Length: 594
Ligand SMILES: Cc1cc2nc3c(=O)[nH]c(=O)nc-3n(C[C@H](O)[C@H](O)[C@H](O)COP(=O)(O)OP(=O)(O)OC[C@H]3O[C@@H](n4cnc5c(N)ncnc54)[C@H](O)[C@@H]3O)c2cc1C
Ligand SMILES: Cc1ncc(C[n+]2csc(CCOP(=O)(O)OP(=O)(O)O)c2C)c(N)n1
Ligand SMILES: [Mg+2]
Image 1: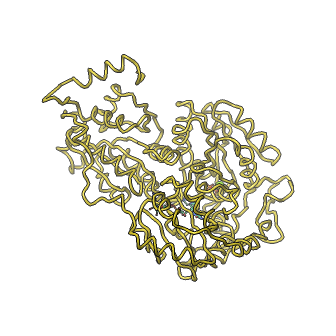
Image 2: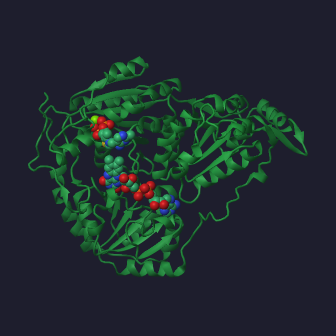
Image 3: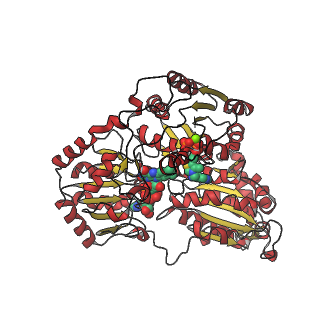
């Protein structure tokens, strides 16, 4: 029933007058759940049913919310996560108790590490048998305590509305994150008065709205105005707070170059003259050198992950650090801050901007430009077409073919993820979705589904390795059942490539457990009714991508790339940020398989 129809209005009226009691309607906990989700603006939910959540599923018939049946509950959580990252809105997943709930754990941990706002709803055994090892009982609030921002065990229908309202508020406010609501079966089945207003969030001690004192601004301005070699470290918090315009204005006004974290890519257009590119383990060498030689780091919504800093002992030794972050727990956690501005980045930059002087760092920018000189050394894409297909070619061509369209690239975890970060030039915010902090293989396909549901007008390209794809490929069926136009590029190198690379560099090429057998991906895709092709040569990449765009259904492309290529440059674990392993020079092709 469409929300705007007369029938819907009539039904809404009926629904609200049903079981009226003291002026407020009485509804089952299950109906209150859907009613609240609707009021929170939820249109789509990703889930998988089972006994303990069945009352909620039964009540779905009264709701306008669209339920997408997944093939594994991990998929539901990544879909909710992809949905959230594509828009900034809360994504919602639902599952039954026990195995349904525990299957969500990886997705919840993934969302937690990357500050992604999702709400997970699980059914629980009846409140009378809690703690008795009842059928499919797992203490999921206990299990998820350290990987949720907050969680709830709801044992009465009267608590459902409050839990849902608070869960959405907590998931989205401050530093976003996952919230789980575990609802016992009897709480779903019994009735209670439904009072939306009375269920408003009440959280004493939760302060998502901190803002810095004026002295802190003064101290930050002093450092900014006296710095000769400053660098902005642009992180995921920029996208979360929506400070895109503010960051660009700040960088331009102060003339400070910007290095980005993996999760910050897209926060400043790649083509912007102050954009240096990605920092860290697989960042550009000159970016890391710039950071190491800086005298001031301005960390904007980034948390100095170890993939970003390399050895902390030698990290940016001569730089003062200004850390802007909404989470006070991040300040001086890994890197000591000289000035901390705790609060929402966008609001802080709006305060800072009119107070900051025009900057001129010509010498510093020219110096950095000279550092870039060796770019070609790393650039395998500059190799003439020798018949061998490299992942860099695929990503570079994919970027060329998709750059003028509204495209969201959703990557999995491994070498292909790093090549995407290096060779796909992200111009727009929320155009890259990837699991950074947890590095969850299997993320891309379901997260891509969530992104497509959230932004149906955008082209979604899932870029996955042959290993990670096989972890969640069951969700191909979800794509087909939901008639979603999702494009899938498998970067098929026959290995758990990133692990093989570590074995090559640090374990004397002992390729234990990394050669990987895969099914015939074309036949697999076709078994689901998905148009599927294989690409083995560079000349076939562009036509395959164009054909995918021209086809109005989902497409799978099996890019069979060079098997033993490695991601360069690289900071070895524990090494200093500027001590990078560089691509062998002159460029070597390693292909021996054709
Ligand atoms: C194989 C692999 C290799 C990797 N290599 C690299 C690499 O080379 N380089 C790299 O950069 N990363 C790399 N990563 C990713 C890395 O592990 C981290 O996930 C990433 O660096 C984190 O980026 P971030 O700090 O910007 O984002 P997050 O971890 O999401 O942190 C965001 C920060 O912003 C804050 N924040 C949120 N909202 C706001 C707001 N409104 N206002 C202010 N602050 C806010 C949060 O509190 C948090 O501190 C790699 C990952 C994998 C899996
Ligand atoms: C769930 C999970 N298990 C294990 C790992 C460790 N790991 C990181 S990268 C990687 C290899 C990924 O292989 P593939 O998906 O083929 O991508 P490639 O590196 O070859 O591009 C592994 C096993 C992980 N990140 N996630
Ligand atoms: Mg692989």
